[in-house]
Length: 310
Image (cartoon, rainbow, N blue to C red; front, top):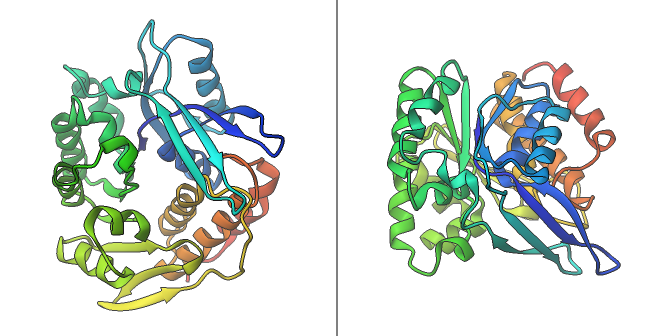
């Protein structure tokens, strides 16, 4: 089960015009998990407008279970706009303060959500998911996750810190993130994000901080610099296999997380899971947009499904 928000995406193309698509960090991960053959559902809220219908149709086309998606009449999804520079790096601008996704855990919503999490082997969410509920519903969300974990679900968290969403005061964010980290079995942070929020100076520092917080499995992403993990309490660096000149880095981390988690669910060792994550991220950043064509990922996912765990 992936939890968060799917939005309308406007991304500027090479002709400087904007194209419309759909996406969101945890939703992107859900799509790629489903393509990897993992039975995946998405939990969010949408409106009753044509764009909400388009999101549901996309999820269905990608074999993402939509039974946990609430519908709130009269509401419309959030919107984000991407500007991409010549190096493929992107800047996001958001219009999502009144997104229906923010009300999933408001009021008595948590009671209706809990049954959808029963039996989930893995629950995945991000720092952006936490922002969605920070206005109202955060305590209910964390309590729901704690209950699911007590019933046997593994919890995976990507910090995915966005200062444009949270504002300049970092202390409240650290408090919220710490509460989520305390519930996490797996964390998949990006070094850039954790450097900005926590002041980390190195991947090893990030790894040690999460390990000291009690997290059992950690993989710190550093873009083209590769991924760092801990094996038997020792730092292990897993470089990117092939250098890529990205076209668009949107969903690089989201797709990495999907391939990594799919590989771990299939029984692969952590280092092998990192390599699958690297390879999927390389495919995604070689295309524009968060969700790339099926043909681009089919071969890798076929290999992942057929590979023997190492």
